Image 1 (tube, rainbow, N blue to C red):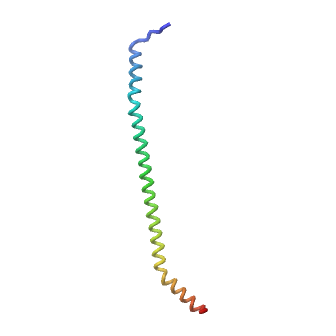
Image 2: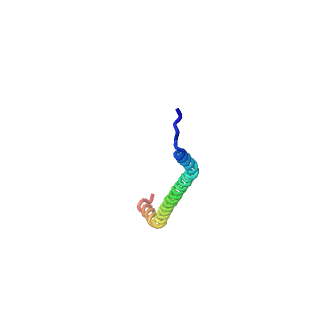
Image 3: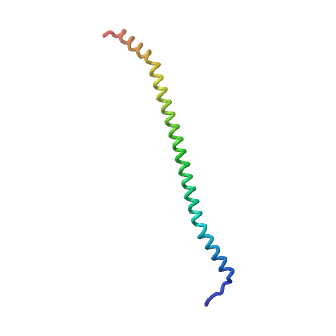
Length: 88
């Protein structure tokens, strides 16, 4: 037995389905753009962090170099004194 449905109801359902189908590509592309923006943000965050770590390593290497330069006289003096105390 066939049920008669009001035409306004079928039109409303059809329009709702068309609206959902029409919006799907825009929503999908919005998700793609959001994912791309998030990935790019993480990439830049990692780049900044890596650059910061490289700066820290450079400063540590410079500090070690300067400490060695300043300790040259001290090491030379220690070697000379050791040679004077142990002439063999």
